[in-house]
Length: 85
Image (cartoon, rainbow, N blue to C red; front, side, top):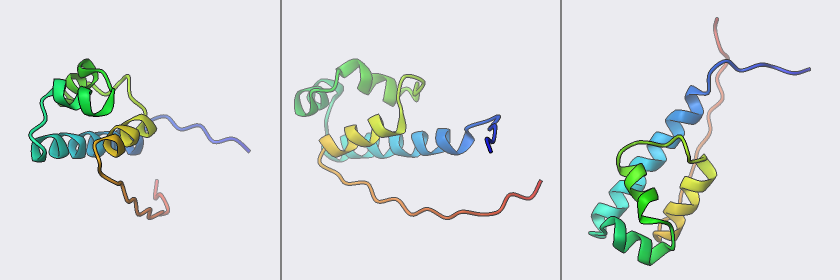
């Protein structure tokens, strides 16, 4: 049985939260986009996109890889709720 999902708001919210954590980490370490590039090998332009919340080109996996390359770990707790439509 296949279920169609009309909106990926949960995934978009997770991307936004992850991007915010990347920005926090960069601020904590006082990293410019260029310094973040030098530390991680991720393009400085990608860090600019993250700073501007332009996350269309990023998957959650990719954002999590970026935060790991910045020296942080990501712990996720999942809570599943029944939808009430």
